[in-house]
Image 1 (cartoon, rainbow, N blue to C red):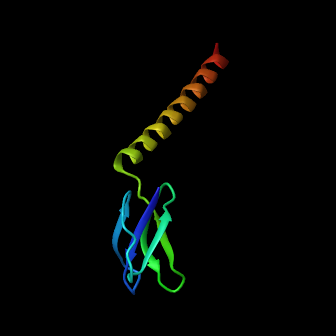
Image 2: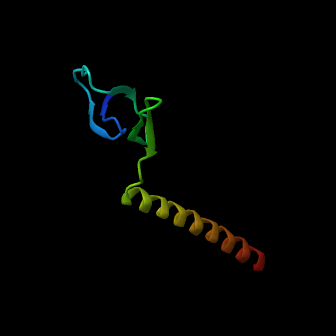
Amino acid sequence: MKTLIIYDNEGSIIQQITGSYRVPVGIPYLELEIPEGKHVVAVNVETKEPIFEDIPKSEIEILRNKIAEQEQAILELTTTLAMLQGGYN
């Protein structure tokens, strides 16, 4: 979906609109598709290109990743212990 970015002469974003909008006349703007996982933080006024940054992960996403890492570590530890116990029988 296209997004309208209205910016000033220094590249600071004044307004960002997705969905239905009217293209301005006489005001610097860009119409663009924003890649998934990114957001526009400014506009390079010389090249008229957006400056993207990654959207920071939410606390929930960070916790889900930690849980997944811990589950993997537990699985590896369980496998190692099972192999060690099997070797002693």
